[in-house]
Image 1 (tube, helix red, strand yellow):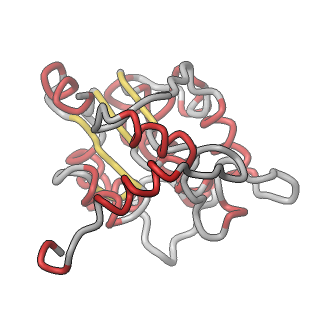
Image 2 (cartoon, rainbow, N blue to C red):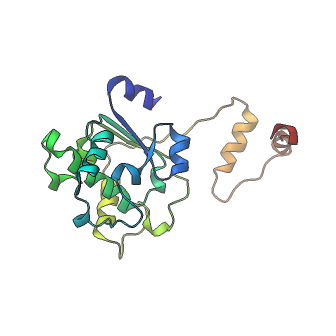
Image 3 (cartoon, helix red, strand yellow):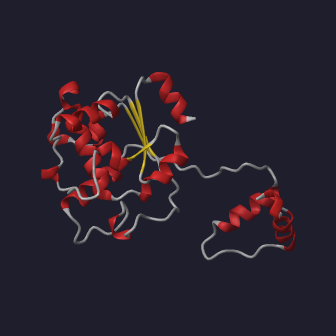
Length: 208
C-alpha cells in the first residue's frame, strides 16, 4: 500500500532493507542500506570517514537518494545503529547542495535522511535483532560509540509510531485464536479443536 502511493507522488523513492535477502523480499527495486550508503565491508563508519570522497560516489548518491522524495526502510530492527547513522549522514552530504541543508543538524528529527519528505521505518517489533545483538537500535548504550548513540537517538526521535495490532489472511476464528496464543508471553495451551485444525492444514509432499 505504502510504496505504490509514494510512487504516485514522488518521481524517486528509495526502498531499503538491512540485507540482500530482506531487500529481495521487500521489493524488486529495493537495495541494502550498505549499498545506498556506499559502504563496503571494510569501510569505517566513523563520522570523520563518511564524507563523499569521489565523483563515483557522488554519482552513486545522485542516482539513488539525492533527489528522492520518499524513503521506506524495511526490517528496521535488524539494522545496526552505526549503519543507520552512516546512511543518514552520507545522504545528508549528498542532498545538502540541492536543499541547502545544515549538515550539523543531520540527526534532528526533521532533518533525517537529508530532510526527505517521507521516511518510514517498518518491521516486526518481535523480530530478531542484528548480529551481534549489541549493534542493534534497541541495544544498551553503555560503552557504544558516538555513532551508535547517534543512530539510536535518530531512531527514537522518529515523529510517529504506528503499531499494527491485527493482520491476518483468514477470518477463521480457530486460526485467529491460534495466532493470538502464539503471541502470548510464555505461550498458551491449544485446545483439541485448535490442534486438529493445525493437523488438517498439513501439506503433503506433492505440494512442497
